[in-house]
Amino acid sequence: MLILAATPIGQVADASGRLAEALVSADVVAAEDTRRLKRLASELGVEIGGRVVSYFEGNEERRTPELATMLADGQTVVLVTDAGMPSVSDPGYRLVVAAIEADVPVTAIPGPSAVLTALAVSGLPVDRFCFEGFLPRKAGERTRALTELATERRTMVFFESPHRTETSLRAMAEVWGADRPAAVCRELTKTYEEVARGGLGELVEWAAGQEQGVRGEVTIVVGGVVAEARTYAPEDLRDLVAARQGEGLSRKDAIEQVAGETGVRKKDVYDAAHS
Image (cartoon, rainbow, N blue to C red; front, top):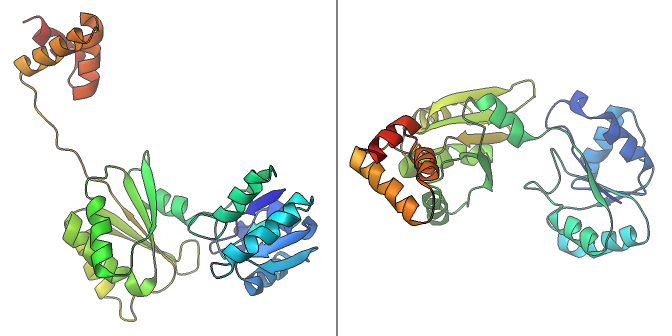
């Protein structure tokens, strides 16, 4: 079995009991940083029972077949990254695919997530969201990526390094407008946790005003574009109902569908259709 185990993003006390048990009982523990893994085990008061191997971006492609062979041989492999859930902007995807192809069960030990934590404290809509990971480092590629997201209506979540936070916020403000609501979540769950909220322009000023620069782990949450409300004249609604009827809907169903599509009250659509 392959077990994807979430690790704390800040507070060690957030680690689950299942994580501690898995570190003790697994045949193999694959870690993004073996030194961090050993420190985590020490803080949890447990001893890792199986073999420890490194599994990070630099050796992920080469080591995946080795781990897949161990899984196929019946060994239990636990995968941990530096913080949060493996495969979410961290190593893990290749190994999951390899395990599935080998018909090996894949499960997860859920736990802390910077994506969900930032969304929860951002104060922005969370009913629909998308995770975009890290923006490109090169200015041209970054601008193109932001331009492609200019019409995104869902709340967006980004990871960013502290020394590029101001640059990314400035690029967002230039492409999406200084008034677009956003939040910069820094050092989530840690001692110096901070959440700065405001328009992108305000957050550029906030980042620029940090005496020692933005520090710590950074997650940026940005509100999606808000669609402008459209006003429908009675004749527009009547034409929309007629068009739906032409597609085979009954008048009742056509009125209900048009009301749902336009956000206009069903009674007003009914009145327009019968005028």
